[in-house]
Image 1 (tube, rainbow, N blue to C red):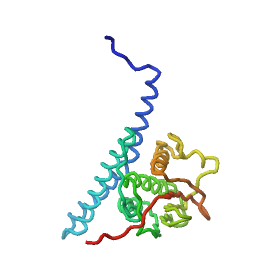
Image 2: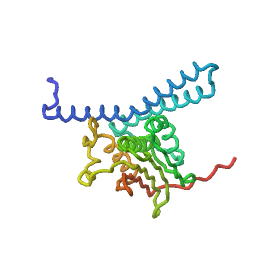
Image 3: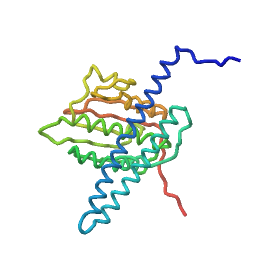
Image 4: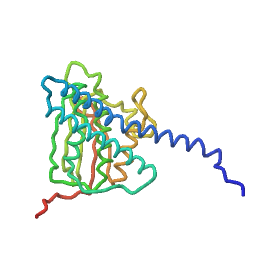
Amino acid sequence: MASIKPSPDLRPARINALGEFAASIAHEVKQPLAAVTLNAEACMRWLNHDPPRIEQARAALGVVLQASVAASAMVRSLHGMASQAEQERGAFIVDDMLRDVLQLLRGELRQQGVTLTEDFALDLYQLDADRVQLMQVVMNLVLNAIEAMKDVQGQPRALSLRTRLDDGALRISIEDNGPGIPAALAERIFEPLFSTKPGGTGMGLAICRCIIQAHGGRIWNEAAQPQGTVFHLSFKEYTLWTPSRS
């Protein structure tokens, strides 16, 4: 019996899909791998210090381990999304998840001279969601904010992360004081393969929207005042954390 060969008409679509998936992986693991490199170098400097700074070296190695685990988890998450596997959901404290993301990005924030403001008010609130995927979303948005502020001169580069309950929904807001997004492009930034950055893959925000919508949430952006952009993530399904009793 002759084998059935895929239609030539399907090959470009498959090639495009593979290209998008490869771009997604490259985009998602770039920052955790950068954190591995940065903190491994810091660890070596602390160990080569006379006398060696053991506690600082241990802390740097802790970030290396955390970043390695995050990179591996993100690849598994993307593979799961591509194969339409079930999400690995579980309850977690929202503010704790945000602090873990910021821990991975401390070196990048410091290198870029970004002043960070944390205004968290959801220490007792949980999401039942795929924690790794939501970390991906927040990491993407924070990195985009850092990139947007690279040309800010004459004033601090300011990044703000806030959590609130707003009109019955749990909201995460990420705000920068960069130049903002032109109104003509604001409606297109979530489209796959559309990018406002030279050399950008155009996948980051598309992945973010896919993940948030899969969790029953909403993502949108608006102009910040007096300048910049703020991205909001909103979820109507959440629970109040209660400590377990032994």
